[in-house]
Every structure is written in C-alpha cells, then in structure tokens.
Image (cartoon, rainbow, N blue to C red; front, side, top):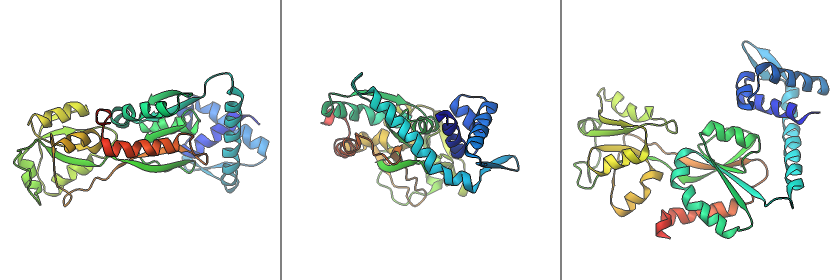
Length: 298
C-alpha cells in the first residue's frame, strides 16, 4: 500500500473535492483519481461515491479515516526517527501574515534561547497554505485562523479582535453609544485583507442605509495605522497590530460594541493527536507577549 495513495485519500476527505485536492498536492486530477481507485482496489471497497457533481465518503470510507491518519502519522514518525543523529532536529513553525509580523519576531528568540540544540524554520503563508502544510506534516505548529478539520487540534492563543481606533484628541474619543450616522461623518482609513470578514464592518453602515466616508483604502496594516496615528481618520484595525499603541496611549479605542462585535483569535494549530514538542514554550511566550507587548518591553 503506497503512502502517497493514502495521502491523496486524506486530501480528498479534507477538501471534499478531487480538483481541490489535486491543486493542493500539485498533481493532476487524473493522478489523484487513479491513486484513489488503486487504494480502493487494494482495500477491496469503495471509499467515495458520486453524488451530483461532487463526491461523498461511503460508510467504509469514513471508517477508514482513523486508520489512514495512523498510517501517515507512523510513517512521518519513522522518517523523523531515522533522521535523528544525522542532523540537528528541526522545528518548523508556520504563521499567517499578521501573526508573522507582530508575534513571531517576539516569540522566536524566546524559543531559541530555551532550545539552543534546535534549528528553527519559519514559514509565513495564508491560512489555506498552512492547512495544507499541516496535513502534509511539513509544519509542526501553525498560528492561523480557526479551521474546522477533524485531523487538526486548535487552541485560541492570541486576541486579534477588530477595534475602532483614533488619534488622541479625536472628536469620537470618550464618546459612548456612538451612532452609525456619527461614524459616517468622520473620515475613515479602510484596511482590508483576506484574514478578516470586513463585510461585517460594512454592515454597520448598510443597516443604517448610509455610506461611510472612506478617505483612504489601503492594503498594508502599518500604512493604515500610521494614517490613523497622524490624524487622517479613524480605522478598524486588528488588535495585534495596535496592541502596543493602545497601551502607550498613541491610539485610543472607540467603543462600538453596541454596533459591532468582531471577536477573532489566532489559533495554535497542530496535527492530532501529538502535542508539539514546543507547546508549553509557545503557551509561555503567549503569556509574556500579552504582558509585555514587544521585545523592547522585555
């Protein structure tokens, strides 16, 4: 039984699509289909059945999932064991873009200080790429958005809620129960990226049947934050990028919880059931980050 056939099976299970599984594996659709068919012949049972234009797991296919996971896990553990003694052990950390920018530079030196014997490899990538790499055992632990997958374990680690912030002295500072109409009168620095559901921000104005006064629309967090800091407008920004500025008073949060609650977290994510070697160190670094905010405060 070829391990690549079992991996193809698990990718199709995850994506519920041969086409998407093929893209993630960098293979053609016919190749993935052939691997599934070969696996079915070896197991003497159908793992998937056609339903409309898609495919669904059969009962036998669903029963096979835990065994497929165990085979892949055992294979990876065997590879790792054989490498021991030849090279320094390598730990691979992945993170989405915002965590890469604001948390990883704080945490990596702490992890290295406590584990001089390890070599650290860091990968910054979008959420879907991180999921693929976790499933392929190319990453030990990833920091990413919430992802529903039976093979992945997640724990909320970092608060990354979206907050409305302004420069100190702004007309909205210290105002309570701000209305959507009042917000629409103020210039807005609008930052948008794939990591957040910004349609919910638009909903504030949609419900009130008004248009926000967007003066700047930017695709870079630091640019957006800088514009808010210089008084060019208010901005809805994720907490990780403004955490320090809120502590020092360089930015002020405007309470709009009565209009919008965009609670989001960054999750520590790993392949079940093995807890990553660094997990306790990761939890400790999160605590220190929440207390200190940046390396300069240590």
